[in-house]
Image (cartoon, rainbow, N blue to C red; front, side):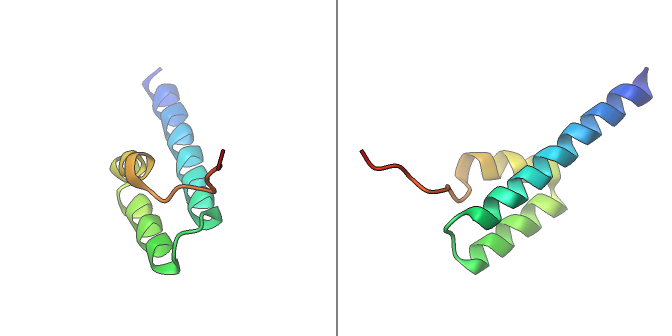
Length: 64
């Protein structure tokens, strides 16, 4: 059962990393910021995702 759970968590992490990188490239951040966020997420996937979620480049903002 350990292999299945580890495989499932790994798949979830992979999907989250791909989604985050896609979101980074769709953001309006500068090219340098996009590159830094992408490298951070690839090198440190779990920590990088948490930091990106809290402080990363935001997408288009809505104005009321």
